[in-house]
Image (cartoon, helix red, strand yellow):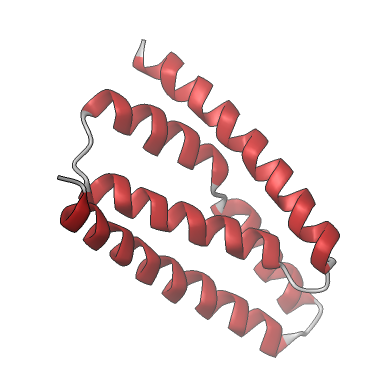
Length: 120
């Protein structure tokens, strides 16, 4: 049952990622992978919030593993980083790497703090 709930959540998250990515890319273009960065930042913040909130197990499976697991994307981040390196766009590659990792960790920490502080 939990696997089914996580799967439904993942489908919802993947659809959200696709729509969000299309929206941001339409606004900003494809020169720099801003859509994936923003999606992963938002997912990091929300997962940190969920974790800090100490949500019950079923909610964590559906939202954390499912929705946010389907929404965020390490594989696309990795692919886009490799493509920037392949294009020898060193500054873009390094800024994308640092913003993704440091920003994601920072936002997860902020979310965790907010979850503990305001989650009850």
